Image (tube, rainbow, N blue to C red; front, side, top):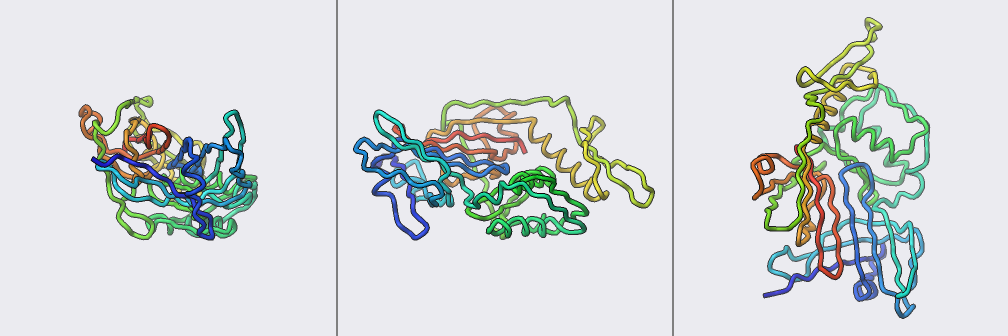
Length: 331
Protein backbone atom coordinates (compact mmCIF):
# COMPACT_ATOMS: atom_id res chain seq x y z
CA UNK A 1 0.00 0.00 0.00
CA UNK A 2 1.45 3.34 -1.04
CA UNK A 3 1.70 5.98 1.70
CA UNK A 4 -0.09 9.30 1.28
CA UNK A 5 2.73 11.76 0.61
CA UNK A 6 1.87 15.48 0.38
CA UNK A 7 4.06 18.01 -1.40
CA UNK A 8 4.26 21.66 -2.31
CA UNK A 9 6.15 23.42 -5.06
CA UNK A 10 7.21 27.07 -4.94
CA UNK A 11 8.57 28.75 -8.06
CA UNK A 12 9.70 32.25 -8.90
CA UNK A 13 8.16 34.20 -11.82
CA UNK A 14 11.16 33.26 -13.99
CA UNK A 15 10.43 29.55 -13.44
CA UNK A 16 13.12 28.89 -10.84
CA UNK A 17 12.00 25.92 -8.71
CA UNK A 18 12.61 26.41 -4.97
CA UNK A 19 11.57 22.87 -3.98
CA UNK A 20 15.10 21.64 -3.23
CA UNK A 21 15.65 24.48 -0.78
CA UNK A 22 12.17 24.60 0.77
CA UNK A 23 10.85 21.05 1.07
CA UNK A 24 13.67 19.60 3.27
CA UNK A 25 13.28 22.56 5.66
CA UNK A 26 9.49 22.74 5.84
CA UNK A 27 8.11 22.63 9.37
CA UNK A 28 4.55 23.59 8.51
CA UNK A 29 2.47 25.40 5.93
CA UNK A 30 -1.00 26.94 6.12
CA UNK A 31 -2.98 28.13 3.11
CA UNK A 32 -6.23 30.01 3.77
CA UNK A 33 -8.68 30.37 0.87
CA UNK A 34 -11.81 32.45 1.36
CA UNK A 35 -14.93 33.16 -0.64
CA UNK A 36 -15.23 36.81 0.37
CA UNK A 37 -13.25 39.77 -0.86
CA UNK A 38 -10.22 38.97 1.28
CA UNK A 39 -7.14 37.72 -0.54
CA UNK A 40 -5.92 34.18 0.11
CA UNK A 41 -3.03 33.96 2.57
CA UNK A 42 -0.02 31.66 2.79
CA UNK A 43 2.23 31.04 5.81
CA UNK A 44 5.38 28.90 5.67
CA UNK A 45 7.65 28.02 8.58
CA UNK A 46 11.09 26.68 7.63
CA UNK A 47 14.06 25.27 9.58
CA UNK A 48 17.16 27.43 9.57
CA UNK A 49 19.23 25.48 12.12
CA UNK A 50 22.38 25.87 10.02
CA UNK A 51 21.82 29.55 9.27
CA UNK A 52 22.21 28.92 5.56
CA UNK A 53 18.66 29.78 4.49
CA UNK A 54 18.45 33.41 3.36
CA UNK A 55 15.26 35.19 4.36
CA UNK A 56 13.32 36.20 1.23
CA UNK A 57 12.86 39.94 0.77
CA UNK A 58 9.45 41.53 1.12
CA UNK A 59 7.75 41.84 -2.23
CA UNK A 60 9.10 38.55 -3.60
CA UNK A 61 6.51 36.77 -5.79
CA UNK A 62 6.03 33.02 -5.27
CA UNK A 63 3.85 30.64 -7.26
CA UNK A 64 2.36 27.84 -5.14
CA UNK A 65 1.34 24.35 -6.23
CA UNK A 66 0.25 21.72 -3.74
CA UNK A 67 -1.17 18.23 -3.62
CA UNK A 68 -0.13 14.60 -3.31
CA UNK A 69 2.76 12.72 -4.95
CA UNK A 70 1.59 9.24 -3.90
CA UNK A 71 -1.20 7.49 -2.06
CA UNK A 72 -4.22 5.27 -2.69
CA UNK A 73 -6.79 7.48 -0.94
CA UNK A 74 -5.94 10.78 -2.64
CA UNK A 75 -5.87 12.33 -6.10
CA UNK A 76 -2.28 12.36 -7.35
CA UNK A 77 -0.90 15.62 -8.70
CA UNK A 78 -0.16 19.19 -7.71
CA UNK A 79 -2.85 21.88 -8.02
CA UNK A 80 -1.93 25.45 -8.95
CA UNK A 81 -3.01 27.83 -6.17
CA UNK A 82 -1.75 31.00 -7.83
CA UNK A 83 0.87 33.62 -7.04
CA UNK A 84 1.59 35.08 -3.62
CA UNK A 85 3.47 38.21 -2.65
CA UNK A 86 5.67 38.04 0.46
CA UNK A 87 4.56 40.81 2.82
CA UNK A 88 6.07 39.70 6.13
CA UNK A 89 9.17 37.70 7.16
CA UNK A 90 9.86 36.65 10.76
CA UNK A 91 13.08 35.07 12.08
CA UNK A 92 13.11 33.38 15.50
CA UNK A 93 14.87 30.76 17.60
CA UNK A 94 16.17 28.60 19.04
CA UNK A 95 15.92 26.44 17.08
CA UNK A 96 16.38 28.98 14.32
CA UNK A 97 13.51 29.19 11.86
CA UNK A 98 12.02 31.56 9.32
CA UNK A 99 8.30 32.24 8.94
CA UNK A 100 7.12 33.68 5.63
CA UNK A 101 3.68 35.26 5.27
CA UNK A 102 2.29 36.14 1.86
CA UNK A 103 -0.95 37.24 0.22
CA UNK A 104 -2.45 36.00 -3.01
CA UNK A 105 -2.72 39.41 -4.59
CA UNK A 106 0.46 41.02 -5.90
CA UNK A 107 -1.21 44.32 -6.81
CA UNK A 108 1.12 46.40 -4.68
CA UNK A 109 -0.17 49.23 -2.55
CA UNK A 110 -2.56 50.61 -5.17
CA UNK A 111 -5.47 48.31 -4.28
CA UNK A 112 -5.39 49.36 -0.61
CA UNK A 113 -5.02 53.10 -1.34
CA UNK A 114 -8.07 55.18 -0.44
CA UNK A 115 -9.72 56.83 -3.43
CA UNK A 116 -12.63 59.08 -4.31
CA UNK A 117 -14.41 58.29 -7.57
CA UNK A 118 -17.96 58.33 -8.92
CA UNK A 119 -19.63 56.33 -11.71
CA UNK A 120 -22.93 57.13 -13.41
CA UNK A 121 -25.07 55.24 -15.93
CA UNK A 122 -22.63 52.37 -16.36
CA UNK A 123 -22.47 48.61 -15.82
CA UNK A 124 -20.95 46.37 -13.18
CA UNK A 125 -18.56 44.96 -15.77
CA UNK A 126 -17.27 48.41 -16.70
CA UNK A 127 -16.66 49.36 -13.06
CA UNK A 128 -14.79 46.14 -12.28
CA UNK A 129 -12.74 46.41 -15.45
CA UNK A 130 -11.62 49.90 -14.50
CA UNK A 131 -10.70 48.79 -10.98
CA UNK A 132 -8.69 45.82 -12.21
CA UNK A 133 -6.92 47.82 -14.92
CA UNK A 134 -5.76 50.63 -12.65
CA UNK A 135 -4.27 47.99 -10.34
CA UNK A 136 -2.35 46.38 -13.21
CA UNK A 137 -4.62 43.35 -13.19
CA UNK A 138 -7.28 41.71 -15.33
CA UNK A 139 -10.92 40.96 -14.61
CA UNK A 140 -12.89 37.74 -14.87
CA UNK A 141 -16.59 38.51 -14.42
CA UNK A 142 -19.41 36.06 -14.98
CA UNK A 143 -21.64 36.94 -17.97
CA UNK A 144 -24.72 36.83 -15.72
CA UNK A 145 -23.32 39.84 -13.84
CA UNK A 146 -21.25 41.84 -16.32
CA UNK A 147 -24.15 43.74 -17.93
CA UNK A 148 -26.04 44.59 -14.73
CA UNK A 149 -26.70 48.35 -14.69
CA UNK A 150 -25.27 50.76 -12.13
CA UNK A 151 -27.05 54.09 -12.18
CA UNK A 152 -24.81 55.67 -9.56
CA UNK A 153 -21.86 54.46 -7.49
CA UNK A 154 -19.60 56.53 -5.25
CA UNK A 155 -16.22 55.54 -3.89
CA UNK A 156 -15.81 57.96 -1.01
CA UNK A 157 -12.31 57.68 0.48
CA UNK A 158 -12.47 53.90 0.14
CA UNK A 159 -9.87 51.46 -1.18
CA UNK A 160 -10.44 49.38 -4.30
CA UNK A 161 -10.21 46.26 -2.13
CA UNK A 162 -13.04 47.51 0.11
CA UNK A 163 -15.13 48.64 -2.86
CA UNK A 164 -14.88 45.21 -4.49
CA UNK A 165 -16.02 43.61 -1.23
CA UNK A 166 -18.99 46.00 -1.09
CA UNK A 167 -19.96 45.14 -4.66
CA UNK A 168 -19.70 41.44 -3.85
CA UNK A 169 -22.22 41.84 -1.04
CA UNK A 170 -24.45 44.09 -3.14
CA UNK A 171 -24.66 41.59 -6.00
CA UNK A 172 -24.35 38.43 -3.86
CA UNK A 173 -21.17 37.40 -5.65
CA UNK A 174 -17.83 35.82 -4.97
CA UNK A 175 -15.49 38.79 -5.20
CA UNK A 176 -11.79 38.11 -4.80
CA UNK A 177 -8.33 38.58 -6.30
CA UNK A 178 -6.54 35.54 -7.73
CA UNK A 179 -3.12 35.82 -9.32
CA UNK A 180 -3.47 39.49 -10.42
CA UNK A 181 -7.02 38.73 -11.59
CA UNK A 182 -10.24 40.15 -10.16
CA UNK A 183 -12.76 37.28 -10.05
CA UNK A 184 -16.44 38.17 -9.74
CA UNK A 185 -19.13 35.50 -10.08
CA UNK A 186 -22.50 34.57 -8.53
CA UNK A 187 -22.50 32.67 -5.26
CA UNK A 188 -22.91 28.98 -6.01
CA UNK A 189 -22.49 29.42 -9.75
CA UNK A 190 -22.25 26.16 -11.66
CA UNK A 191 -19.92 27.69 -14.26
CA UNK A 192 -16.86 29.91 -14.28
CA UNK A 193 -16.77 33.31 -15.96
CA UNK A 194 -15.51 31.60 -19.13
CA UNK A 195 -18.39 29.10 -19.11
CA UNK A 196 -16.45 26.10 -17.80
CA UNK A 197 -18.51 23.81 -15.56
CA UNK A 198 -17.54 23.79 -11.88
CA UNK A 199 -18.03 20.19 -10.70
CA UNK A 200 -19.95 19.62 -7.48
CA UNK A 201 -18.22 17.58 -4.77
CA UNK A 202 -19.43 14.96 -2.30
CA UNK A 203 -17.80 14.71 1.13
CA UNK A 204 -18.55 11.78 3.45
CA UNK A 205 -18.50 11.58 7.22
CA UNK A 206 -15.77 8.92 7.25
CA UNK A 207 -13.38 11.31 5.44
CA UNK A 208 -12.52 13.23 8.61
CA UNK A 209 -13.26 13.65 12.29
CA UNK A 210 -14.45 16.79 14.13
CA UNK A 211 -17.54 18.50 12.74
CA UNK A 212 -20.04 21.15 13.82
CA UNK A 213 -23.49 21.97 12.44
CA UNK A 214 -25.41 25.11 13.43
CA UNK A 215 -28.98 25.94 12.41
CA UNK A 216 -29.89 29.50 13.44
CA UNK A 217 -33.26 31.21 13.46
CA UNK A 218 -31.98 34.71 12.51
CA UNK A 219 -35.19 36.19 13.96
CA UNK A 220 -37.16 34.18 11.41
CA UNK A 221 -36.71 36.88 8.77
CA UNK A 222 -37.72 35.39 5.45
CA UNK A 223 -36.86 38.06 2.92
CA UNK A 224 -35.59 41.59 2.40
CA UNK A 225 -36.81 44.98 1.24
CA UNK A 226 -35.05 48.04 -0.14
CA UNK A 227 -36.00 51.61 -0.93
CA UNK A 228 -35.27 53.59 -4.06
CA UNK A 229 -35.81 57.17 -5.22
CA UNK A 230 -38.53 57.45 -7.85
CA UNK A 231 -37.42 60.37 -10.04
CA UNK A 232 -40.82 60.63 -11.71
CA UNK A 233 -42.69 61.32 -8.46
CA UNK A 234 -39.83 62.52 -6.25
CA UNK A 235 -40.84 59.96 -3.64
CA UNK A 236 -39.19 56.99 -2.00
CA UNK A 237 -40.66 53.63 -2.89
CA UNK A 238 -40.07 50.14 -1.58
CA UNK A 239 -39.48 46.81 -3.31
CA UNK A 240 -39.34 43.48 -1.49
CA UNK A 241 -38.75 39.77 -1.85
CA UNK A 242 -39.68 36.89 0.44
CA UNK A 243 -42.32 36.64 3.15
CA UNK A 244 -43.85 39.05 5.66
CA UNK A 245 -40.97 39.37 8.15
CA UNK A 246 -38.41 41.03 5.90
CA UNK A 247 -35.03 42.58 6.64
CA UNK A 248 -34.97 46.27 5.60
CA UNK A 249 -31.81 47.61 3.97
CA UNK A 250 -30.67 51.02 5.22
CA UNK A 251 -29.43 52.37 1.91
CA UNK A 252 -31.72 54.21 -0.54
CA UNK A 253 -30.96 53.13 -4.13
CA UNK A 254 -30.94 55.25 -7.27
CA UNK A 255 -33.29 53.06 -9.29
CA UNK A 256 -35.94 50.40 -8.85
CA UNK A 257 -33.75 47.82 -10.60
CA UNK A 258 -30.85 48.41 -8.20
CA UNK A 259 -33.16 48.21 -5.18
CA UNK A 260 -34.62 44.92 -6.45
CA UNK A 261 -31.12 43.51 -6.98
CA UNK A 262 -30.03 44.57 -3.49
CA UNK A 263 -33.12 43.06 -1.84
CA UNK A 264 -32.66 39.80 -3.73
CA UNK A 265 -28.98 39.60 -2.74
CA UNK A 266 -29.66 40.40 0.92
CA UNK A 267 -32.40 37.74 1.11
CA UNK A 268 -30.06 35.12 -0.37
CA UNK A 269 -27.24 36.03 2.02
CA UNK A 270 -29.47 35.82 5.09
CA UNK A 271 -30.91 32.50 3.93
CA UNK A 272 -27.42 31.01 3.58
CA UNK A 273 -26.42 32.27 7.02
CA UNK A 274 -29.15 30.23 8.69
CA UNK A 275 -27.17 26.99 8.33
CA UNK A 276 -23.42 26.56 8.72
CA UNK A 277 -21.20 23.51 8.87
CA UNK A 278 -17.55 22.98 9.82
CA UNK A 279 -15.55 19.84 9.12
CA UNK A 280 -11.97 18.70 9.67
CA UNK A 281 -10.95 16.66 6.62
CA UNK A 282 -8.35 13.97 7.35
CA UNK A 283 -6.73 14.04 3.92
CA UNK A 284 -6.74 17.40 2.16
CA UNK A 285 -8.44 17.62 -1.22
CA UNK A 286 -6.58 20.39 -3.03
CA UNK A 287 -9.12 20.43 -5.87
CA UNK A 288 -11.78 21.93 -3.57
CA UNK A 289 -12.35 25.67 -3.93
CA UNK A 290 -14.44 28.33 -2.20
CA UNK A 291 -17.95 28.80 -3.67
CA UNK A 292 -18.03 25.18 -4.87
CA UNK A 293 -21.28 23.26 -4.42
CA UNK A 294 -21.00 20.29 -2.03
CA UNK A 295 -23.16 17.41 -0.86
CA UNK A 296 -22.47 16.11 2.67
CA UNK A 297 -23.17 12.42 3.19
CA UNK A 298 -23.48 10.34 6.38
CA UNK A 299 -24.90 12.92 8.80
CA UNK A 300 -28.48 13.65 9.90
CA UNK A 301 -31.21 14.49 7.41
CA UNK A 302 -30.92 18.18 8.33
CA UNK A 303 -27.32 18.14 7.08
CA UNK A 304 -27.56 15.83 4.10
CA UNK A 305 -30.71 17.47 2.71
CA UNK A 306 -29.07 20.91 2.67
CA UNK A 307 -27.34 22.23 -0.43
CA UNK A 308 -23.97 23.52 0.71
CA UNK A 309 -21.41 26.03 -0.59
CA UNK A 310 -17.79 26.07 0.54
CA UNK A 311 -17.18 29.33 2.39
CA UNK A 312 -13.52 28.87 3.32
CA UNK A 313 -10.72 26.30 3.19
CA UNK A 314 -7.72 26.17 5.50
CA UNK A 315 -5.12 23.64 4.37
CA UNK A 316 -2.39 22.69 6.84
CA UNK A 317 0.71 20.67 6.03
CA UNK A 318 3.06 19.51 8.78
CA UNK A 319 4.33 16.49 10.66
CA UNK A 320 0.87 14.85 10.62
CA UNK A 321 0.47 15.15 6.85
CA UNK A 322 -1.85 17.48 4.97
CA UNK A 323 -5.31 18.17 6.39
CA UNK A 324 -8.07 20.71 5.83
CA UNK A 325 -10.59 22.63 7.86
CA UNK A 326 -13.66 23.37 5.74
CA UNK A 327 -16.51 25.75 6.47
CA UNK A 328 -19.80 25.71 4.57
CA UNK A 329 -22.95 27.78 4.27
CA UNK A 330 -26.32 26.35 3.37
CA UNK A 331 -27.30 27.40 -0.15
